[in-house]
Length: 258
Ligand SMILES: Cc1cc2nc3c(=O)[nH]c(=O)nc-3n(C[C@H](O)[C@H](O)[C@H](O)COP(=O)(O)OP(=O)(O)OC[C@H]3O[C@@H](n4cnc5c(N)ncnc54)[C@H](O)[C@@H]3O)c2cc1C
Image 1 (tube, rainbow, N blue to C red):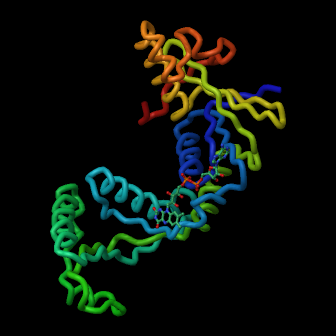
Image 2 (tube, protein in one colour; image 1 turned 60 degrees about the vertical axis):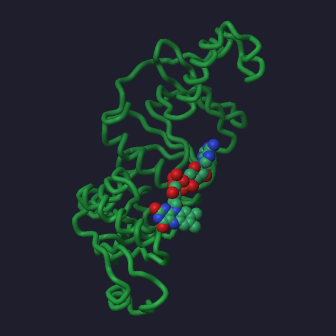
Image 3 (cartoon, rainbow, N blue to C red; image 1 turned 90 degrees about the horizontal axis):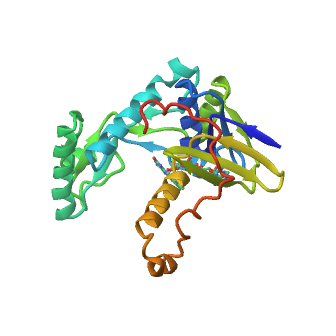
């Protein structure tokens, strides 16, 4: 029995859950999330939930700021939230190297637009955090706006948002085998579930298809080197993708993605 979706997401953790909501909001069409267990039973319900904009690179600073802004908008957008609370976050420096790296990190973060991150001396840090001794460290970087979510509440929030966005969640889908089809720049994935002998076709895959595409490129580049292909266990050109894995249809790219 064959079924068809516009986007299939594998895994109903916080990444797959929220990604499926954003895709549905972008008007992708029919979005199906396949979860081998129950939604949120992976790392997403077990995490500590720390969310901070004090990242180590400009990209992670931007991602942290986006995340905090997202968590703060959730109640208005979805009528529920992940329990984000601004508690402040202190990254302590213990050694001289930590301190030097910490000052460099703060300068980088401020350059990336995080203007409210600041360096606290050891005394200032101890005054701020009642349970912290003033000795044994060199102070650290601090930002009021960082904090944490409540991971189980976040699972609840994206589950509700998925329902509201008409994302279809299928749980206990053990035995999923994604198979890709590539032809003339198209991307497709076929999900096979041997136990149920079911099949779900979609036109987009963000990981396996890229791997296959890369593999196909390598096979092509090594077309005159059967010795190397043998060593790398790569099939001969033309044999890499069985004809039966063909894309069924094409859709425009997800907005904001390639
Ligand atoms: C102890 C701990 C503390 C953490 N603390 C923090 C923190 O303070 N701050 C922070 O930002 N991050 C923290 N993390 C990391 C954070 O939890 C993860 O980065 C995040 O939850 C990853 O989300 P995910 O959706 O990618 O993975 P998961 O939540 O693990 O979800 C993946 C899902 O995919 C399913 N799945 C996998 N393979 C298949 C398949 N073939 N078919 C169907 N379903 C499949 C799994 O069953 C699972 O439900 C912590 C992690 C742990 C373990």
